[in-house]
View 1 (cartoon, rainbow, N blue to C red):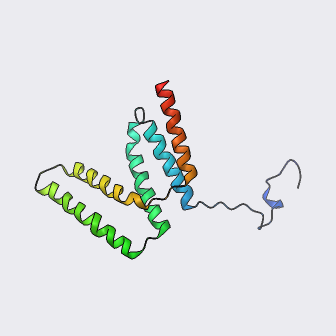
View 2: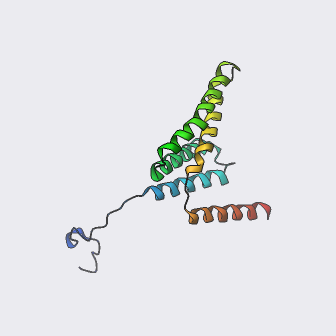
View 3: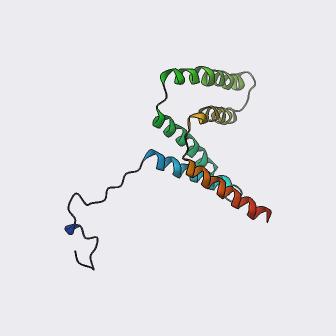
Length: 142
């Protein structure tokens, strides 16, 4: 291989080519860092709140796909979480005449709060989250 052309593909055989793969954990870490960025910078970037909500839902979905919970756990979650919340959603829309978007937002918050117990975040990512929050607090207080 010549010095001037270190990445030329004619010198590389098929076994030495670099293949990039993105794992579910790296996607979850990226989404988690997106949430941390939006939460810690909420005042100037309040328009990013829908992106944060989407990132939370994606983290929960990817975590559920990664751990593959047992069927009895899924049934228990459906019975204890979704049915009462759906009943409350319908009751709040029909009987109390609440606005539909407001009721759906509240329903989404409660469902994601219940499903958050299935999310597994890497310990190193959690440590970085605490460090970023401590840095922000020291800047705001100081």
